[in-house]
Length: 292
Image 1 (cartoon, rainbow, N blue to C red):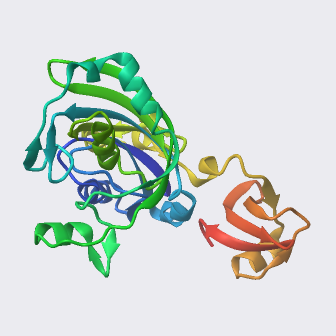
Image 2: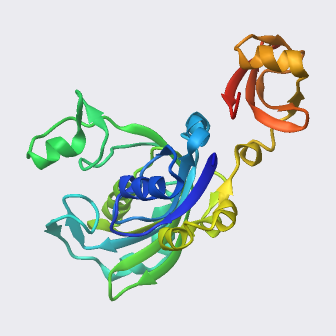
Image 3: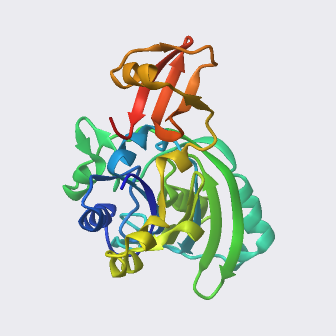
């Protein structure tokens, strides 16, 4: 089975753990387009079989998160998994809706963000969390990100918590955003909850839990309902229909003349989806092939 399946990742396991469990169900190569922290939940698109060839089309997707931010406490990992390293008073006026929304609004748009030290970004060949675990300091370069929307969802004054919904670009670290928001509110804070509800066009409403997937592992019809085929994934792309001889040439890597605009196209033969091709300078070359 080739395609994409959207998993609703549970808390307490890594994205790699989920990949391994899905491999045992499909008996196919399985990959992901970006990880979620163990404490995070929500949308985790997995690529199955030939679907792994689609990764280049998925890595730049924007994302939407529901976020819980706890104020007054700072941890070394910037989330609830870390050790408390600082505590600070939180003024009551911080929780006034107008004050919160003013601060949140200031984070909209393009900006430089410094990733957390506990992250997998590599500096001089080592992941940042490797430096952190050894107590070593390292210079972390800021990265360009964009916050498209940030909305206040809920305020819990007694728990010193606020809940937000954040729509952002690829590469945004919500843990860093939480610390930056807390700092602008005059205190410290950490990300105490994170649920990813959208990755590109993949929605939490279309995701399946691992428990449900494993319960129905022998029911191929049931599982097929949750697998997005490559044909469906690329359904908005225009189609090219090839006859026998041209199909043979196409599959063998020969470039075919096609007077079309540059871009990606679905390729068909006798009404059957063959895969994806790329047109450049009016030449069609193969990209993703389902079968030969």
